[in-house]
Image (spheres, rainbow, N blue to C red):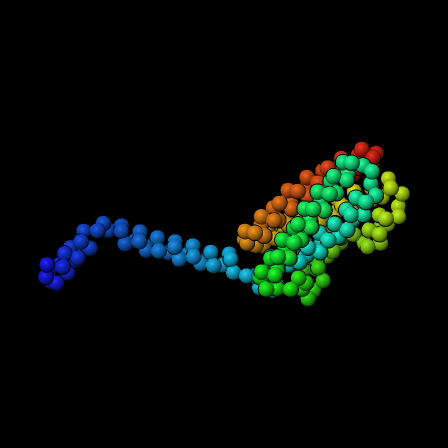
Length: 215
């Protein structure tokens, strides 16, 4: 076939394509480009000040205090149910600390930021506000230290009350980051924290009632 005949055949084939073909092709190309752009955005390392970075640092510090309190009572309590809760709590939160520290390392960021933990911005009920450690359920160190010296029954009650408050703050932090990031790994962890700590709050409230204390 001569070149002129090949060109004519190609033009004829193009003209026989349905009118909707080219708009559809353009739409598909736009979808592919958008998908590639979202993939790049979702896997790129977040920068300093990103809500995911703040969450990883703040929740790591938050978990460390929970682990400290749980270890104290684990070593003192004779209540098998409470001890099992504490062991689960310690293992879970230590594992999550490792996960979040791993993120920061992979993102090329230091484990600690310039500002103290839990003093940045959070979203609560759709409003941006400045958090404080107290709002996030962080307990005064003097109260944590008392768990070592109080009479055991009173120490268990104080621990349960403190940890309920602590968990409520953790849930607030997880809800806040869900409102601020679409990073899938951060969202998965935040959702798991909300589920686990909400359930543990209910269980600790029941343990208080068994001890004759109103939650």
